[in-house]
Length: 435
Picture 1 (cartoon, rainbow, N blue to C red):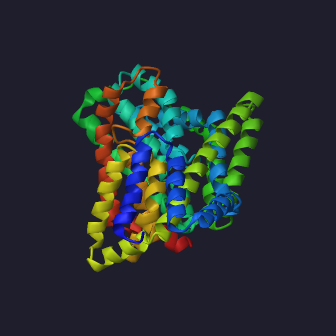
Picture 2 (picture 1 turned 90 degrees about the horizontal axis):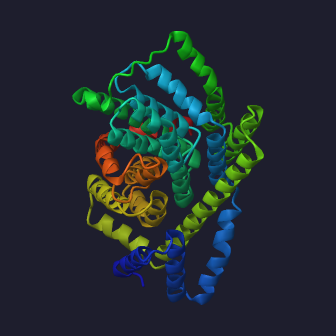
């Protein structure tokens, strides 16, 4: 091997194997190990297969993945999400489209203590969708809002997407998490503007809610979110202040979520067991995907594909905007068929070296890539958040409704992506002053 054709052949074989129904992590590992055996010899392949998984699993820096997953599982079981939504609802009840705003706010807040978009979309489908339908909100737009708002967890720390990007590229996970904060808040702001336009142009999508709350009742609702504020302060404050490494902050957040749940009497043994089981299963699945991606990265490096494609891009004098345009198209197409984390792990091994050879800021690049993965999570026909909402809706939402309702939010995401591409400082300023 050692040329572009061989590298693209590897990627083509991988896509065929995935299309055959083989799980992405296993497919990447199998293709990479076969390729390593052919290019570098069987002893090298066996040595890599022996050392690489252990090196990943035993590295303290990677503890952040299961810790963030566990924190998300515990907060879901503790009822923190319900109280967060209740507070957001009371403060927005008197506004046209208030339930859309409440869902957006609560999802943004929940993203600060949970790194999983699927968990967020599933929970808010169960909490918010019945309320929206009860007040005669548009079923399709309600489903679209919940699915799209669930993606906030992809950027707002603690973001599993950012953590995995940092693992694969060996960039500072802390800087990446900090870099995702302003883009995440920008996404919330764009959603607010977009929702305002939608309900103004189509008032029937959000009939006025007659229920009103006094200032006392609104202030009273804030008492219920102390647990959320405490966890967000532990995790985000620890990372932003530099007092904790991301792994330490994740462990502190998971421990804090457990203590809070026990103190509130919300965590029975069965719920604790279910949370631990969920965290173990999800973490194992993520590690299999990451290990497969590292195997693939090793093969692409050994084969010479990465150095050759980087040299080729440099030799043709590809402009940064042209590279970013290609990147956007690549991720949007893949996002229609491949789950987000898998897509991230599959592409970073060859996308990142090319980006660095062009002199792109790795933090900005990480934000853009994770944003594209976020858009992929709500892009038909395979957007994972869409099916999370459909599955959790108890037949209130079908595929046709979901696909109609998500379209306006894909437009909002496109606007946000354009702003992030046009103004890299949105992503890079906070890390530059924090690290």
